[in-house]
Image (cartoon, rainbow, N blue to C red; front, side, top):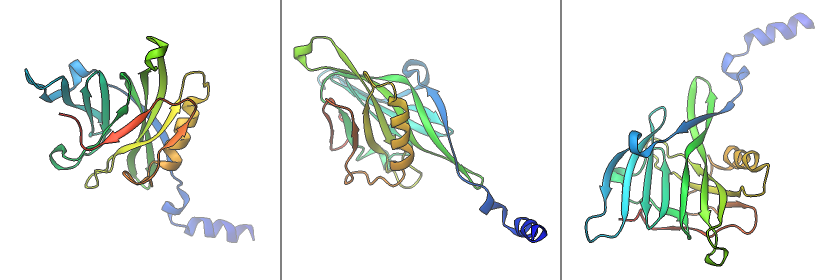
Length: 202
């Protein structure tokens, strides 16, 4: 019997024996040194700036800022950057320079499918200059699909397991998340108001 089991194991195709591995890569973005500005406000156009930055293994990061707020798109965008939704918090905010990319390795393919980035969000005006930290989980747009968007939000202020919770959302929700129709996962209360509207501001 032992010889038979061993023979079956040898006959099994290698790809069936190799399970998917999920890992993390941390990418720091220096907007002044690493990014290329492709659009910005004119003298009478308000205050906005749009730039493209390097991400993970050729996957770009598009960063948009307007009115002291930011919106970030990860991966391959729609053609000519059209129809990228503006996704941000309602109050003033800024994102951290480093993002965690969640990566699937299976059958010789390495695919980044989600990111996690810490955001610093101004509390309601009644609370003065207080900032709330939120981990934003985003789906990475894949070549030819351009389906990147925010999947979930985890309130990090006062939550020691915030990173663990964010990774769970990324690994279990991001790949099958339908941008524009599925409801974002919210963990923590009170969560700062987050919204999406049309394409990126300009």
